[in-house]
Image (cartoon, rainbow, N blue to C red; front, side):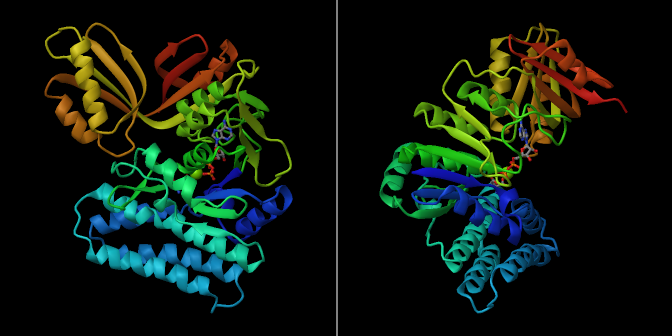
Length: 419
Ligand code: ADP
Ligand code: ASP
Ligand code: MG
């Protein structure tokens, strides 16, 4: 079996969905599991709904209506007959959402978040599955929440591999074209969970691992893995072949073309990963596989924007030692900060973090009881794999360098735009 993942960009409109059909016609669709994300920016739009709900904003219904209209427009372009069952199926998902928001009493933001954002994937797969049937491509719609089991860390759930393995072995019919949702799972009470933003690549890897798939292909709006994000760097070049090791490093440092959790399950079973263009599906793209000799011959650039550089120093000039550092890390973990760089000296300790969940104000209040806390917000973290003097200059020119760190293959620089 092959696992294909189509992300938000590939299904952002009716043309995109028709293109997914065309890709399958070109590359084959027998014995394939399709993992599909929410359409376009739907997840962001549903985040607005959740915010409006918790803020008790008068905009709540309008924000739901906006998401609904966006999908309805796509439906109108895909299906001539408004009596087609898909209209009712999608309509029901949105009316269920309104019922849920009216009825829930939960003050747990992250729980409500997962119940709501997950609808993006439920709607997209419902539309794609109906459309494929409509144009004669028979398929089975699979509810991933019945297969991928997780703990209840809403918004960043951890997979229960044993339960998931059992469910997937039983629940997926080989030889069919199966269509399922990326990003979602469910906890032991069957409440929906999500695997972290952009987590659909990871879903593809979970299925591939459990099905012993032949390969995973993630279809993107770029030709494959490039040596830099073309949105921020000119002249990015395609990496034809890279090792799991290189891919995991690139993804870990923030090359968003592959979700970082994707590589580990694939590497364990040596399942090849292909990153290909959904615009030119017959081109080879990038292949990620075993092999130490697949190091890129060129510098690779990764940028993480909007990071926080937090520096702590002791209030009484005492050293920052193991016991303080472990306490600091417990707090970073508790407030769900993703640490991307660490630097310490005798009496100070700095971390560059991604405050994905907006918890810094709370964390700062706690840390300030023990440390002097200073910070720079809105800094950029540049990582260069296989760096050179020339590649370093590319990222530092015209910027203030706050931290610079080098290891054998990797250079990391925290910069601030000069105002
Ligand atoms: P999806 O539609 O699957 O969610 P993403 O938008 O998450 O796809 O990933 C594709 C995007 O990743 C590209 O449009 C590109 O801007 C970005 N990207 C970041 N780093 C790289 C890289 N090294 N190579 C290719 N694309 C990259
Ligand atoms: N729809 C989810 C998100 O936008 C998951 C994904 O696209 O991978 O984060
Ligand atoms: Mg994405």
